Image 1 (cartoon, one colour):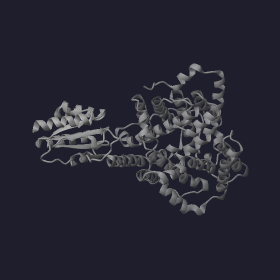
Image 2 (cartoon, one colour):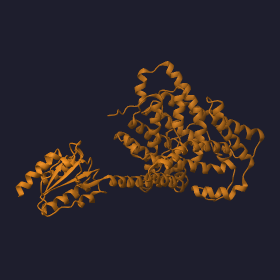
Image 3 (cartoon, one colour):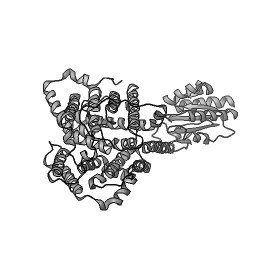
Image 4 (tube, one colour):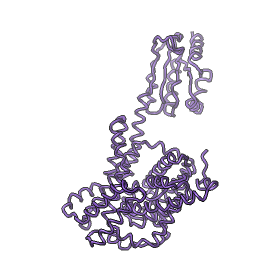
Length: 551
């Protein structure tokens, strides 16, 4: 069983000075990368920029300290932007804090109950669909700032559809200076990585964009003009006001935050494992993510999760232990204490350009095209529905409907491969189990059951056709690996029908899980232990005995 022990405590046993130097350097570089991203993602989430940095500081430190990965870097991510914006704008910050604390508790319980492995049951089509949907909503939400548009007071601008309508309505009011700054910033973000990979492109874009606005005194909104009460310094503890009604109303959002944070974090861990040849502890990572999210919102932040891009940057720059993530948080603390006034100079079009690139990178459009081209129709339906619902409604609806639809379509697919068929004789001398080599006693009918027997296919059991002259029914179950209580109840109904007609049921090759269910349900006692046979030959011999006695 996986240990509930933070990776930090394990790696410190063999820690060296050389690795400490590498971790410190990597932590500083990751902090430089995280600074503009944290500000941008906070704005995309509908909150002030400082909340993004607080999230990177608090959640980043706790997840590194307690986490199950050697190199995970946590903080605000684009995946949370739309759901945070929706809650914060419509229900208020208190509701967001309550939902995140509840989500944190859920993740901690998942870790303690060793449920980290359950995340793999979220279909790939759902994660790809809502990730692409989030990317679209982020991109659409930043067009306003990229073009420097100003809306009339009271204009609804929360839903993605409203944002699209507003852009078309106010497009003629585009601020050319904002478009210029945004265009230059976007060009830097695209071109700079080809020039220099050591210095983050987002940092260069922020410096150039800020310089353009300050030197030429351009009429462009900046963080300072949008958030006039923005302050630096350390966060203060803020506990939310709880009520039963609020907890009940925020429960769906809490589960969505918990599921999303778990998926994103563990996916980041898997990617990191392949890069450093390590193995993360998924349950410990969930506990750390839960604790990090609770602390984050209580100290001025927003929901956090493992950030794949920042984690990859940590690895590429030599970080190999959680110390790097802790250093990244400490560097951001120094920024909040001494450099925050300069953050007010960052133009909003530059932030929008950064988020355009974030949206593009997270969209995974190549994956989306591959799904549409090569996946089965049912998977395409799940992907498209999840994507559309994420864009048009919100992530809560998209995940709920996506999982439900995936489950229904999966059951449909399983029911299609489950068969209850009478034997059809065919010549096959090379197969010792071939039906042509089996001698079926008179007054005996044999049915082959294959595939999982569950509620969606239970009715197929009752399609078994019996004659008045039949004395024994042999059910061959070598291809049945699972059975649920609904199918078990149908088998009991079949037994009662057979009993009325004086027909004895003989079971052949019942696998472990179905056998356990039958024993627990009392079905074994009902038809008799002697009528459970390990092989079809034994079952046919037993049927011969039964038929001879009846005669």
